[in-house]
Length: 175
Ligand SMILES: [Zn+2]
Image 1 (cartoon, helix red, strand yellow):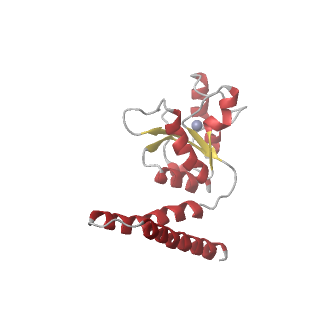
Image 2 (tube, helix red, strand yellow):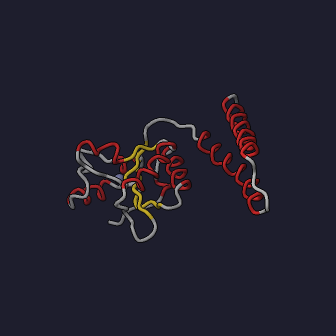
Image 3 (cartoon, helix red, strand yellow):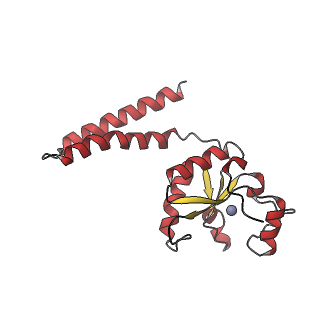
């Protein structure tokens, strides 16, 4: 049985959270999403999972988990910080990381991310990204020329971007 990578088999709102997570992390891709009980039983038999799929149900069977790997030669990086980096973004998207969930039990599950069960508002994250985009342009334009921005000018640009982000958040929250 092959792993199912189709994100559309995931359950909302987790599906949107997982899609957002993958969008924000171009270095990774989904290796498995929804699992049938048969597939879960197969993994259990191969000792690739500690859940048998019947008595112990995986979040994958509920459409509430994804496994990921990294593009490039190192599918599963040995460097913990590489994982931690994407896990921090996952957290912003409302996902719990397998490592954080089970490392204390001795079971290390780096590729696994599942729904944290809470509805999340991702606006904060989006606004930081658009904020960075807004200030990037004038800074880059200036750096290509002879002049560089003064510290005061950079601070002014950041303040403008922060004000805009806050205004946008307030607008969304008061809708
Ligand atoms: Zn998993």
